Amino acid sequence: MNFLEERIQKDGIVREGNVLKVDSFLNHQIDIALLEQMGAEFKKRFAGKKVTKILTIEASGIGIACIVARYFNVPVLFAKKTQSVNIDGDKYSADVDSFTHKCTNHVFVSKKYLAPADKVLIIDDFLARGSALLGLTEIVKQAGAEVVGIGIAIEKGFQEGGEIIRKKGFHLESLAIVDSMDAATGTIKFRS
Image (cartoon, rainbow, N blue to C red; front, side, top):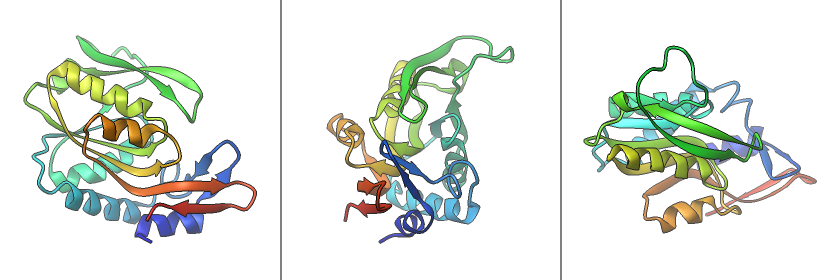
């Protein structure tokens, strides 16, 4: 069992509806030492890749992406979910269904921050059905840039997202893959 799986076993909470709460250390309150370990591990797993940008989606992926970006010494770009007055110019965009929030978000990235020459490493906290990743890869495609890899903290291996992303040929690395969860007993089984 790796460091992230151990932490999930210790502090993760399984809820009905295939919900895994990790908000005490990953996506509400954040354990920076854990994120440092994750950043080092992603750097190791994508060591041979030329990365010019880290791309994520707001909001839960931003913390992880920032730490990973430090290891690659590149900027973080995150797809926004809401338009504001300080966002100007043309944008790349995609629609993304949220498993957690049970809604569809229209996410976008300003064209001035993503160029055809970019080699993009996508980082996110969860992979369930794959909608967020498909949206982010579509944005990279619209820019004419290249996705060189996708790093996920926790993949729900019993849902179809990982299979969809791998079948599309992306280099996907998940630090913890949950094969099953039982809300009644609180048990979590990881892929070996």
